[in-house]
Each structure stands twice: as structure tokens, then as C-alpha cells.
Amino acid sequence: MAEWVMAEILNNPNVMKNVQDELTEVIGMNSIVEESHFPKLRYLDAVIKETFRLHPPLPFLIQRCPDESCKVGGYTIPKGTTVYINVWAIQRDPENWTNPLEFKPDRFLNQKWDYNGNNFKFLPFGSGRRICPGLLLGEKILVYILASLLHSFDWSLPKDEELELSDEFGFVTKKRKPLIAIPSQRLSDASLYF
Image (cartoon, rainbow, N blue to C red):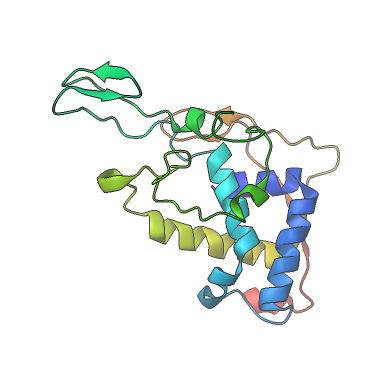
């Protein structure tokens, strides 16, 4: 997921500037990222959530099989039917999202969005009893990695390189073409992260 977030940030330079401005305000230019900073990194959190919306780790949630026949959205699902939830489509549905194909982190700033899948419009990790068990650890690691990379370095694409944002579907959703990005030192004391 770090690759997807970095790709979306590189494709939206104003987003990188906003994230780095937030990191400078919260952390400063003479300190390193610490877990205590995470709750204050609201814009970075919105960027990560918007990336998960456009590029969920699993395009389909783990299959479900109802124990008894039921009705969902006007459809009758017979007992024992295998059902897959297409998260990728739900999170790009224009009935759920304004301009769903645009990368707009601000959509996550003014409302209470979490990864629990309770609203059924944003459920990149599933919901309920079958929610991803590594969610909390994965989220913290991702925030730490991205905050550290974006705090320490400015990032750019290689000269004449065009950014590819196509999905390659499989068990997980990954970038069709791996991201290549060039870091340049942002902090005056590079030894902070070494």
C-alpha cells in the first residue's frame, strides 16, 4: 500500500505539499516521526484512506455463505450460496462517492471515517467478525513508513517518466507497473533517520 500512496502523492504534487506542510507543523524539521504524532496527522490519514478507497488491498472480500436464505437489497440469496463483496466497485460507485475516480483526500477530512466498514461505502479491510485481524498494526506501520519517507525526503519521478496508475488484479490489488521515485534530502540533518 505504501507504493500506491506514494504513486497517488507523486501524481498530485499539491497533496505532497499539504502532507509535508502538516509533517513540518506537527513534527518540525529537527525531529523524527514518533507514534505520538499519528493522531495529529489528519491530512496524511485522509490521503491514506483515499488511497485505500481507490486501491483496496483486496478487490473482493473473503467469500460469505449464508446459513439461511435471506434478502439483501431486494435480492433473495439462497442458503449456501457463495457471495463475494466487490469492494473495488463499491468504493468507486458514483452513487456512494462524488467524482469517484478522482483522488480527493479532502473527502475524508470533515466526516468520521474509520476502517471498521460500518457504513458499507468504505470497507477496504472488511467489516464485522471477518475484518482484517492485522488492521491496527498495518495502519500504524503504514503511517510510520509514509510519514518518515515524506518527512525526510522530497520525491520526484525520473526524468521523462510517466506515472502509471493502473491496477493489476489478483488476490491483492497492486500497481501494474512498479513505482520508481527519486528521493532528495528534505531535512537539514539527514542523520535523524539513520
